[in-house]
Image (cartoon, rainbow, N blue to C red; front, top):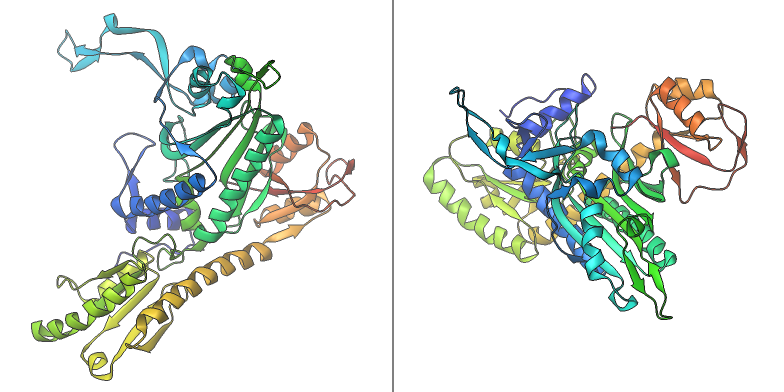
Length: 490
């Protein structure tokens, strides 16, 4: 049978690690804090990437690529930005190795010290805005709507596959605009794109909101975010979009000549999601049998397993299966026919359950005779016999139903684990059980820090669609106009 997965109620952390490794998504590498994304995991990332890439292009963005290395002096041009990333930066100081004169392998060649040290990209605002200075001269050059798919390095001390690694994959959009209003509109548009992707494709319901001043991206005037809740009651930040104002334009002297002939500084945004979305996908939906993948992102949407004895039976079954497979593929459904003979069908069932394949079809000699086929859905583990005639249409409808059901289950879970509290005592008791907590806050960094220190909970966001509701801060009793979202997080 497939490898056993730890029960998530017994040890959620180990359950998550088991799924990542045993379902063949990723593994730790020889480099501390870095991961190897295995083919099955990368196939899911490719679907995430392809879907988002189309959404970006549909909103007028184009792809480009910028260097992995950033001159150290670039980071120091925007003080808040460098302060935000200083502790996470990997620095290149030399460009050559040499054989150790003492015969102990290789050492850094002291003659090869770089004139200026280079930072391995933790994010690309500085190198991109240095580049934009050469691209932008006039209002006719605006807007610049660029995205890049890349890897970044942030030197993490405590790492976890997909959720927090030293090197990870992501996309980062960097746009330049003539006016503040255009830049704010872009920032809000892209967080909306992320929210649509999360709910429609990941099947993960998200809250859209703004970060508090202390939680903003380093160098931003405003950070918008989408926040999701995982099955252990912790929050996961699934994407961010930043209104950067004119901070980077001023730091890198990026100005344009307006229609009126005046020199103006450009307005900026940046926005990104990463392989952390893989963590959200796993933790929001999966169970003790393995992954539960939404059909829209599953590398294999349907697997067909023959039940047979001997080559003659397999040949007859295969003839029928190939016809069914062709029908399904004509509808744009990805299908795998597993007629391998090295393991029993029961092992295959468990393996595809572990890998989260949304629909499994099984067909044997009796099914051929009766013109039926067994259909198992991964989300509910229900099995049912269908007529072979019309099976492609039935499976197509079933995949849509599975996608909707996975989202509804996650949505209902969030609703059941969202609470309003009015007192700090109630908050401290409730936070131990997890979930989103809606509470009043007086708007000060001091109160926010006190709550974080005493409860390990942070303000995940100030909801954009939050209702105006006069109240009192649960800690200080000072006036508050709106509840904010608190949770412990990844």
